[in-house]
Length: 300
Image 1 (spheres, rainbow, N blue to C red):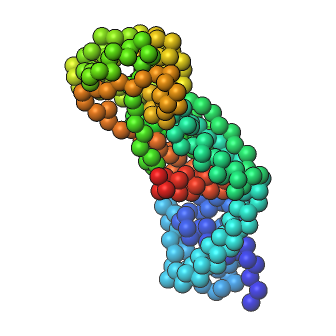
Image 2 (image 1 turned 90 degrees about the vertical axis):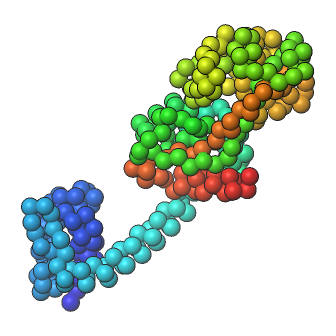
Image 3 (image 1 turned 60 degrees about the horizontal axis):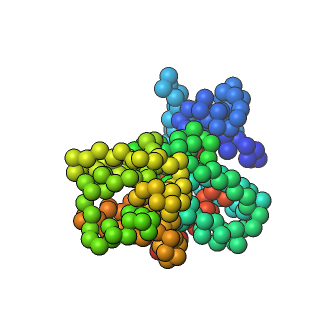
């Protein structure tokens, strides 16, 4: 008996989806062709493989026995194809990423350097967004992965968040405010001083707005910056105090360009997180980048 492999492949998809129509869609074929193939396979084997109903199809006992063998064969072939495609993709593939400023400097850039050393042929398309904008781009399918600062209210199914590394915000000021470093400040005192902050629509504004609200205060920045890296230059020029991630503040603090102020209560840590859309398959390059990000997170 010589039955074409394609018969078994079509049988596998019909059994997997329990639907001739859905199997045809997955195979980029049409239902009549799929039906003809299944009928031909049943004639060749001399038995019924499916029970048909208005709800779809289900395997007969004979079909169950066949599927147990065909499933192993098909999945082994798919694994081999994936491995070969993966090798090619990591030589010349590409991956698109939406990233917030904090995530970019706090984790993503060092990871991309390592990734590029291992896979120099892979190209990156990186768009710099606020965390909500990066998540929105992911949901719309404009990027494959988002690396953002969380919590971020916009993350919901089918998006999944994988926390990678904690990040700590600090309060900084220009040398003009050096006298404020003598003691911890209350949030009320901070609210009464000029403040530079990201504006509404950013996860940072939401985060600090909630922190202020817990003390019965309203976050009302005197200057609203578009990105986190715009806050430090304004602080250096004495335009106000600013909350910035330590990853961005470390260099200016070490150079003495700004000073760190303390609060009478700790600022809760946030997370640099990877967000992906579980309803969409990732490219091989994106899957490999996810593995590299997770490994970097484990290493600390």
